[in-house]
Image (cartoon, rainbow, N blue to C red; front, side, top):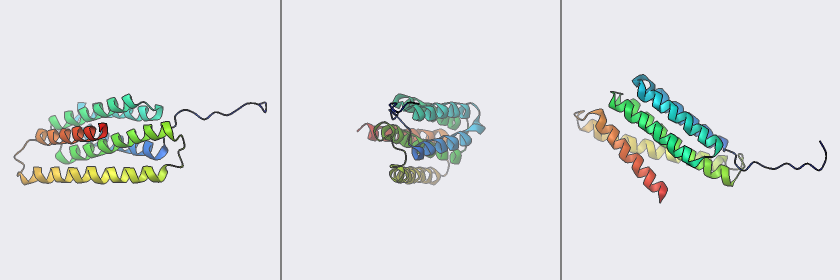
Length: 171
């Protein structure tokens, strides 16, 4: 090496904490939906796309991957997946989706994985609390209806929650 070579920082670097949050969320969603068969496979395929999109910094890939994961959860719910498993998968997907957006935004602007760890952890914690709280309210309402509603009703409720989250992200 000669002394006149310069080191250039990459244009994008995925923040480690958010990437870990996305990966854990995708793994949880996949494990919860795999017993349903096709829905689980769809969830896993979307999860791989989601994680890959965070690693490469592609926002459209994040959106597409999240959509495929959610479609897998809907398919798992429609084919008789348990209420608990579907809700846990949905919460994990919401956390993964939000963490993925944060990762792509931070990775493109900050390019420093260490300086953002505390903010990422705080964001992940807040998203998890809000998503789990919303899920608890939804499941409580479902249970209070004495289980007369099919699981597809719960899936529709979760779909409404995701649409709301998307609408809030668009601003």
